[in-house]
Length: 147
Image 1 (cartoon, rainbow, N blue to C red):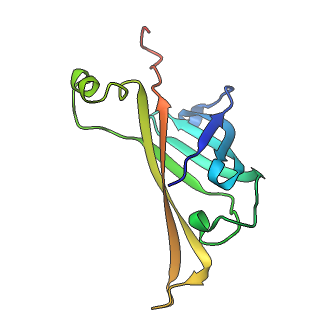
Image 2 (cartoon, rainbow, N blue to C red):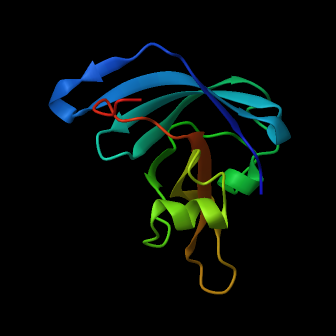
């Protein structure tokens, strides 16, 4: 389980035909001592498509086995993060069970990387590495809200 920091620029590029906003920034992986240039597309339904574009700093040829099943970093990973819907509780119940749940939103998504140069010893099939991404962010107020 690795932690990351996702730092996005404040500037936004609205993409009207796709119904969302594109932002870019850096995803830092402290355990890998690496930073990756990412593009995020924030969709109107609350989901985010995060795409890793290139390694900005850190080792590109060592230590990436946990993510890619090989020592080298591979750009292009894309994951769709969707808001987690907690039980259909009313706001008072959510605040009682966990006071911070109303302040933050959790988004979850998975990505799968197919390792080209590794095979299963038993049957020769390809090996895939599946990663789960969990991002906690502050809640976004809707444009129609009065606060």
